[in-house]
Amino acid sequence: MSLKIGVPSKGRLMEKTFDWFGARGVTMARTGSEREYAGAVEGIDGVELVLLSAGEIPRELAAGRIHLGVTGSDLVRDKLADWNKQVAELAPLGFGHADLIIAVPACWIDVDTLDDLDAAASAFRAKHGFRLRIATKYHRLVRDFLTANGVADYQLVDSQGATEGTVKNLTAEAIADITSTGETLRANHLKILTDAVIHRSQATLFLSHRADWGAERAVLEALVAKLGLSAPALSG
Image (tube, rainbow, N blue to C red; front, side):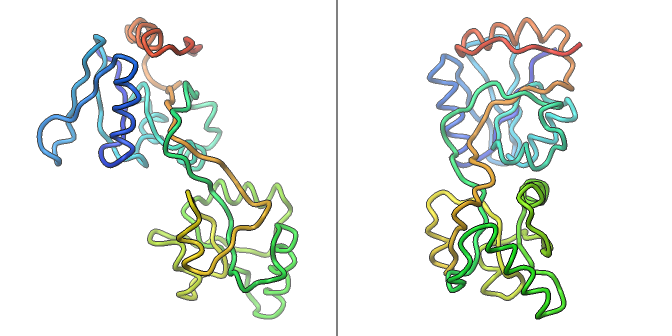
């Protein structure tokens, strides 16, 4: 048996993850063709690299099919109910920074805060007979945030494409999405509410509480020591 660690299978997240581990003496590399999703690990014994999409990693951690995984902290919180009972954060990795925010049309000059949004949502429903639509891919995080802040009279609509374009395309009145610089929002004439940063995300190394931690405990102890991390508490 080996300790399985899930890493994003392409792009800057994969490269930055490889760099982070490499700087700590654990070399990761993709092997074979771009379609094979195979990888190799050197510098420590008993660790197997599993290349997955960043969005798949929370599910695989929760199912216990991988022991460790690198993915965005936003994805874990949105995809896993009671996420901290299913996984543990071992280390923030210092890259992949992005904020999950709520944005509205820049022309809404009287809407700058969540209280303003709540009032606008009530007025919108009274005028149009249906609830103000907020387009997002992050249903759990956005719903919990709005509920905690007392915003009502809205509906979440699923966005699988370019969320910033939904307002222009008249399929939503506002959005909740990830942004790094805000440039795409400004290009689409949207503004971020001043008190509506839902989560500040970054790439994070997570541990699965659901994985089989038999013989892999010793490998984990050796790995975290090499990485300079504190040994995590394991259930069972």
